[in-house]
Length: 426
Image (tube, rainbow, N blue to C red; front, side, top):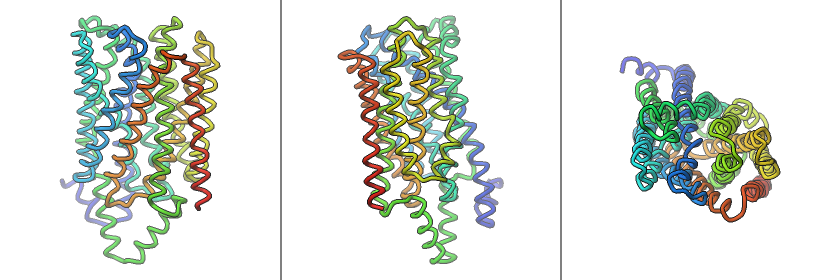
């Protein structure tokens, strides 16, 4: 306790700045670990279900299930964070993700699809927590630097996210030596990574960013009411919207559409490649490039959002996702390079949408209800991902992967009229 007291009891501005730097370092360390856990499971989840069920139409079910689990966890993490702070909320979420990974391994050993599906729901807790961590990075950031703070947390996921899929083959070999099915191997990595991320946060995320932000806000309010009003006005200017409710709706819509399109196309790409004779290593490489494009551009995206505004980058998200869908649809099934490029654009478009949407939400929501509202917004995002993951398998079975990719690209254009309408209201 003696180590955290100075941040909470002394001069507000110096302590907020120092605490923010420490908090970002801790979040970066946990995100590197959780990124590996997230990406490893995504790489083989669809293939594992296809192998156990013998059906392509249900290959999108794992993505839908762990995304549904992500929705449930987003509510829980948001409520725990609202009541007790970011540290217990995020640590609990990652522990649940580790437990889900263990359940997937047991299900694979027992060849039990029902247990697999239940475990995938719990595994989804890691996905939700990975995304919720970005909000913690913005709690103490100034309004004009929030997108960059969010981006710092997101980019840390790149290291683990790129390493995770490329470890799919070696972890599969390791699993076979232990008597575990090859495709369940990456979930060994997921479980260990999520557990370590929980430990890092539980031990080191001090002071708690959300609790400290509240104390600073209370102190500022006690000092002077005009200062508080000026700060609120600055925040409203940073958002670029005239009303809080409209900002929440727009920010949520941006992230919902980008998540829906990204998950649908990403989920079926490994299955599409498998059907064209590519092995786990090739699909792992493509997913690694995709994950890298989802997170690696974050610092640049954060700067663009803070510099040019939330609306312009949100619009850029829609056009980038359209390009990704067209390229994925046109790419020959045997071309790893073109599919990798398409998935890179898919990840970049998602990054544009997530950073701009997160900035809009964080700017708009009052500090008193911030964590709870952010959790509810992430529920909507998770439901969109579950819908995309589930529908993708059925659509590919009924039509084709190119049809899925093209449909997703066209759907992403719905962002443009939404952003234009918001700009018109301004």
